[in-house]
Length: 88
Image 1 (tube, rainbow, N blue to C red):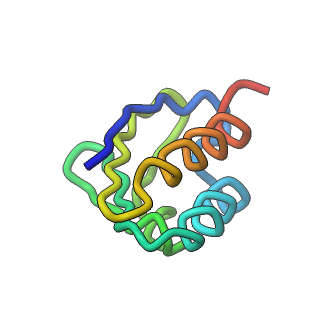
Image 2 (cartoon, helix red, strand yellow):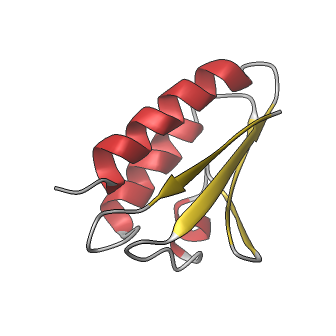
């Protein structure tokens, strides 16, 4: 299993556009990709699941990836989060 933490720095939080980018990225992988915010869990491959996290500005999320292509998925998901949910 691969895991990392990410702090959302986009003032709008995880709204539809970045959530869609994350979901589209996650769907490319066979691995199980979950995102956690506090006690809430979201399937990273499902847009509405990601939106239900309520991840706002400065929220800390934890991404857990488990499966045969987890290392590749980790790199790709990190890049998508950085491109879409960092300051800008």
